[in-house]
Image (tube, each protein chain N blue to C red):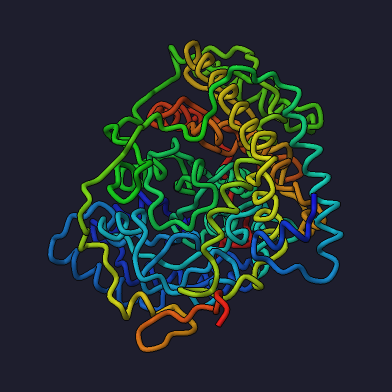
Length: 93
Length: 473
C-alpha cells in the first residue's frame, strides 16, 4: 500500500514518521482483515444496510423548517467574504 | 442514611420533582457542585451548559404551572457528537474546537421537547474512533472505579458520568460497542437500540450503516424511560424505521423468565478470556435459569470475522463521512486530525479505491450477510443470546498506545450485533479485581422490549450495581 499516495487522495498531510508508522500499522490491520478470505462467500448477496427499507423518498419540495439563514450558515466559517465562503483556489489563474 | 440528590435514578428524581419534594434548581446546583469537585479528576465532561440554572428555574416555573411533560426538569448529559444548538460540539476533536452547531440533533430535540435539560457534553474518543476515550484530543477520561484505568469508549465520558453520579442519566452513541463496552467497564447500564430505531439526524456521522444512539443509565428502567422518548421514525433520517414504537417502560412487567429461551454463545467465551470473567458469565447464565429461563449453548460464526467486516465497513464509511471536514464551512483544516482519525480515513480510502474495492469492501459486505443470516437462524429458536461485553475489565491508561486495532480487538464481542443492526444491552454481572464486568443480552432487530424486560428481571434479582465510594460525598 502506497501510504503517501493514499494520504494525498484523502487530502491529509503526514507528519513526523507517520508514513513509516502507518505502513507498519496497516500491515497489522490487514493481517486481521485478510482472515475474511477464509470464508466462502460465493453467490452471497452483499449487505450494505440492514433496515430492509427500499427507496425512501420525500416530495421534492423545499423544507422551510430546515433552512439556515445566511448568517447561521456562515457563523462557523473561519474565512468569509461579503456573505460567501472563501475557498482555496483550485483552478489556475 | 438519607438519600442524596445524586443517589436517585432518573425515574426516582422525576417523581421527586413532580411531587415538588425537590426543585430542579436545587438539583442543578447540587450536580454543578459535584461536577466542579470531581470533573477535574475524571475529565468526563468537556463542557457545561452555561444557562443551566436559568433553564432549571424555568422548569420549576413550568411545574408550578402544572406542565406534565414526561421528562420535565431531568438533567441529562449528552455525548459530544450530538449537535446541540448553542452548546459547543467537538466530537472530542480539535477540528471542531470552536464549533457551535446551527441546529439540534433529533435525539436531543426530542429530549428537550419532553422537558429535559442538557447539563453538559461528555468526553469521547475523537470522532468516536476507539474504545478507550484515550483518543480524545482533550485528554482521556478516567474510570471512576480506578483512576489509573480507562473508562472504555467511545462513550467513555457518558459512562463515567453515570458511575461517578455526575448526572442522573446520559446519552451515548454506538457504532460497534461504544455504548455497551464503556458501560461494562464503568459498571453501569448501556442500551443499544436496533439500527434505525433512533434517528441519527444531527449525530456526527462515523459509520452510517451501524451508527445508533442510546441511553447510558443507572438501571434498565431508566433506559426504557429514555427509549420511550427518543425512538421512532424521523423525516430527517431516511434510515430510521417506520415500525411502531413500543411503550418500553410499561412492558417491563415480567416477574420471572418462564418461557424465555436464551442462547449462551460458546464462541463468545474466548480462549484468551480470563477464567474469572467466564465464570461470571456462567453464573449469570445460572441465574437466568433460576429465574425460569431455558439456557442452551449455541454456536455462531467466530467473532474474529466480525472484526474484519467491521474494520473494512467502518473505515470505508469513515473515509467518506470525514471528507466533509475541510475547514471551509466550519471547523479547522484537515491538519488538525489526530493519528487515529488519519489512519481510519486512509485505510477506508484504500479499501474503497479502484482495484481493492472488490477484495475488501465487497468481501466484507458478503461476510456481513453471513453473520446476519446466522443470527436470523438463532433467533428462530431463541429469544436472546448472551455473552460477555468485553474480554476483560477496564485496562490501564496508556493501553491503546501503538495499538491501531485496540478498539476492534476490544469490541470483538459487540461487533457481530453491530454489523447485524441488532439490539443489545450491557448490564453489570459481577466484579474481577474489584472492577466491574458486563453481561450483554442481545435480541433480534426491533426486539427492544424483550431485551429490556429480560435485563430488568435479571437486574432486579441481582446486586451488581456498585458506585465507587470516593464519589459518595
